[in-house]
Structures are given as structure tokens and as C-alpha cells.
Length: 89
Image (cartoon, rainbow, N blue to C red; front, side):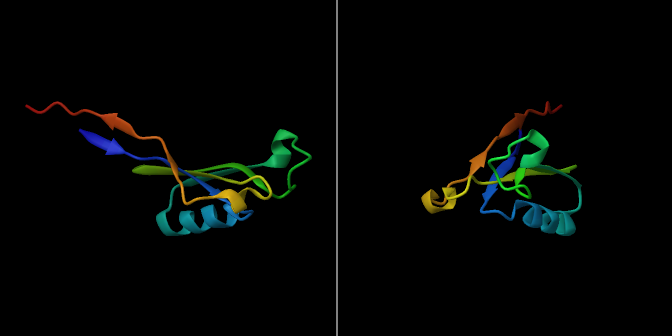
């Protein structure tokens, strides 16, 4: 059985920068969508609504947190595990 984990990270306004760094280290295809792409005028215009780094072996997703949210963070992480079974002969 193979297990893969797909972390979703939150950043205090620098998600794009972090994801571009991860792409430079790991490679893969990076997609970044901003709050403005979703018409969210009450959020920072240059903020990241959703980012996904897709690599053949893993994926990392991220976004910028709502303003002030970082003050309530307690060191948690959100993951979406997926399991795949392999039949052995």
C-alpha cells in the first residue's frame, strides 16, 4: 500500500514567494490564483487565494491567510492523505 500526503499550507501574505521557492527546489508545475482573480476586493490585491505545485511524486497547495489570522495559528497543518493499494503476485 502506498500513502501520499498533500499538504495545504497557509502563509501570512507570502504564499506566492514560498511556492515559487518550492518550485525552484523541487520542480513541477506551479499554478497561482490571486484574490483578485475571484473578485475578492476586500482582500489584498496581490494576495494568493490558492496555489498548487504539482510534481509527479507529490503536490503542495497553499494560500495566504486572512489578514490577522496568523495571530491565532497554533502550529497546525492540513493534509489530504490518499491511499493506493498494489496487488502483489
